[in-house]
Image 1 (cartoon, rainbow, N blue to C red):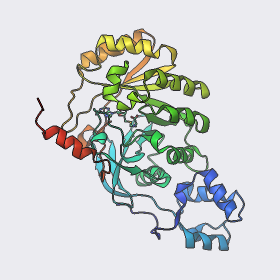
Image 2 (cartoon, rainbow, N blue to C red):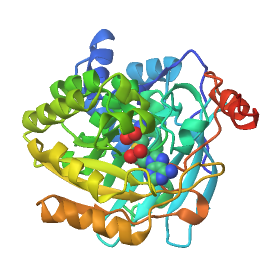
Image 3 (tube, protein in one colour):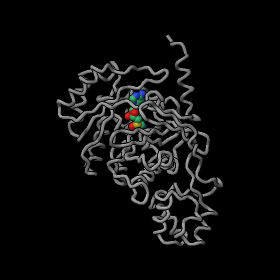
Image 4 (cartoon, helix red, strand yellow):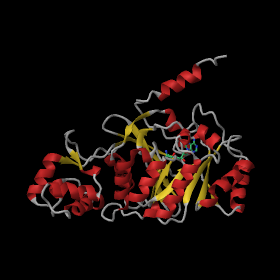
Length: 371
Ligand code: SAH
């Protein structure tokens, strides 16, 4: 298995924690010219060189300083599972012993990497298995970009990752600065050089952060909607209690306008008998009428002890047709990597839960109903 690139003293500065601007500030702070940043980015991300001695266009004294004080450290791949459809899932261990999961999804004309942003998740969406794990901490920029770095290295140049979705474990907008810096590196021509259309952030609807994002970073946006009315969304995606649909839709409109973007993608998990009726579809059409939208219907992926069932395919198709007929482009997400629990909402990693949510859930499940 691949190991951390360079071992390092814990107090050293991990250069993967900086995007280009951060690196420029770092080098200027050392009395160096800002262009050292692009030189370093090229070495790390394009040449795959991580030994400072080999970075021959840096002065000897700068190399000496970097060797003494800095490191280039990613998480470590500790497990790899390959699904029958070619999807690959890696468990990546962070230096503190937690594990997060990263999923590679090859398709005919593109290859997508699904990246985690947090160890566990602090939100409690009732249909998501990551939520059951509780929460430990935000991933650092190095740990977010390190997932892409390691995956690409493991896959080799003949399997280029063409798209990234921040749809792994965690709520990316609750780890704002680190995720933005990592996405900057994904799009930086001196690092991964992906176009902004090929980097997608997915959010459960952290409204203030959506507004902030529009000011600092230009990526595609997916919103985990899952219900067209507040009462139901309050239950499925509890952050809705804080930022209800009217506020969420305003933020979506503002984000689309700031781009300007062709659309916002709305993810909608299909839960049998919960959110999948014709009435729900019609309410969704109404809700989205003032936002440039694309809808992605996600068949629910079950996990141990999940309380929901996936909608019947007939219900999913009917739901799609109602949206289609109202002029909304609607796709049904093909479930990938099911046999290795790599599908949406099935990522669990290994989380040392600080929120104690898993204990609360266990108690709730085993406790007799009070009468
Ligand atoms: N927290 C962010 C990033 C996670 S993205 C967000 O909520 O957008 C993962 C996507 O898979 C989200 O749309 C999520 O709602 C969806 N999902 C979660 N659990 C699922 C499940 N069991 N089946 C299908 N989709 C699920």
